[in-house]
Amino acid sequence: QVQLVESGGGLVQAGGSLMLSCAASKSIFDFNAMGWYRQAPGKQRELVATVPQSGISNYADSVKGRFTISRDTAKNTVNLQMSSLKPEDTAVYYCHAAQKWLGVVRDYWGQGTQVTISS
Image (tube, rainbow, N blue to C red; front, side, top):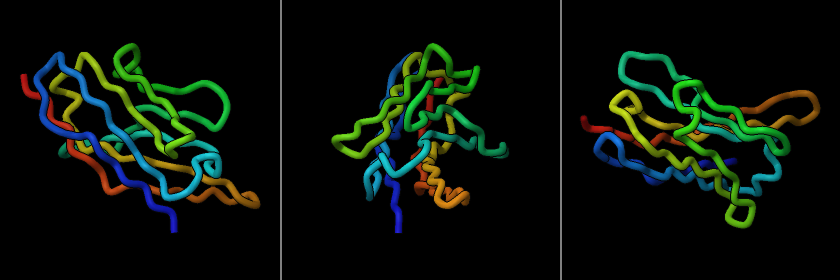
């Protein structure tokens, strides 16, 4: 059973920074891609950033230039460095991992961590 555990959420003022971390219970080399999604109250879950096993990271337009996703293969973590935070970044942030095996993609999700940005 794969587990993803997020940490690093909290309350910060607009313009501040936070780093979210997602610890996987297995080697992140086993995943084809990992990423972060978020869901604000009353809204659908949306992609924030993804990083493939190899290749270029992808970001939502709303966070480009402010957020950076990175993989730490030694610690089996995926981190999301967030800066210049805005009140509209307030949401529950979820870690996601995708694993493709014999043509079938399995998706794994963390439990989420709350990020609140005050104006």
